Image 1 (cartoon, one colour):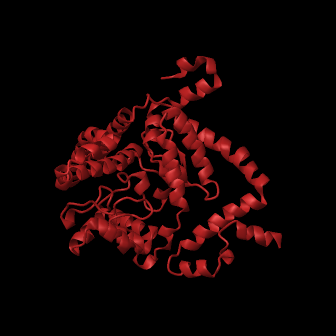
Image 2 (cartoon, rainbow, N blue to C red):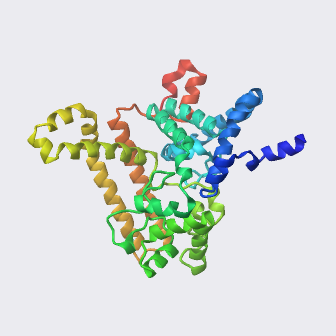
Image 3 (cartoon, one colour):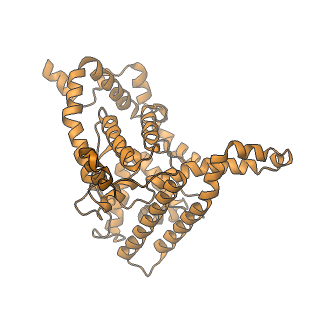
Length: 384
């Protein structure tokens, strides 16, 4: 009896779902696993608090601390870790490759314990980077994970709704780049097979790839990667580790097209730009309401004024990326090398802007912070 119960607990026990959950799962396949996972966390806290604390403090905490120290062991790894988006850290075990120029290993965190590991890493990052927005990003990810609404959308037309809204309901990112001709509406990471097929049937390639993934899941996206390899568009030696069919799900991208600080910049700049455009409306200027609005939203105007240059620079980099991608004279290896160099420059510029605009002190290295905590008397020597 107990063996059977433990076997069910080792995976998702669908027998625990009620009528409403079963009905919603009929139109949205991932709703039941989500609800059962949340219920399992509450049940574990209620029925086995001692066992849960033992697992968290004896097993997970030392492992999380060791991985954090490994991932921030030198300057190159420091940069890679800081550019990793918060939502990736909050949902995955991340293990940097011994060669910091190579892409890290990445494994999905267990649902019950993901928040705990994410909170440990966020606390250490907050101490080392001296950035209070680290906790805000963690809280946002937890709220997003708890929100059941995106999982209620029926699978049958979820991808169509996301395309219509140009918003991925889970990641909150755009589905396709705007302001382009349909045949050029794709991302740097869109597969060449999706680009060619989209142009043949007159469908924007980024939209087509999103639709294929929405209907066929990861299998559909991997099929496009396999098609690229089979057609000779990409050779095994030129494909990034994270884009390798089937095994790429265990590797993270580096350098990233949009790292943590690029994401943060666009979040605050979008709101600041909205304030500025609102204040410049003719009806507000005629009523002389622009001045009071800008005075009340002084921080937003400051962000907008300082961020216009960075926004233009990032847009310029994106144009260069498109030119590099379309250059027939460059080999796949040359394109990838130039694109990665541009990605690094974009992320470095965004981090510098963020720290300057938010008036943050220089970050502390993970090695320096550990030395400072172990030897409080040598705090100044441990700082970079």
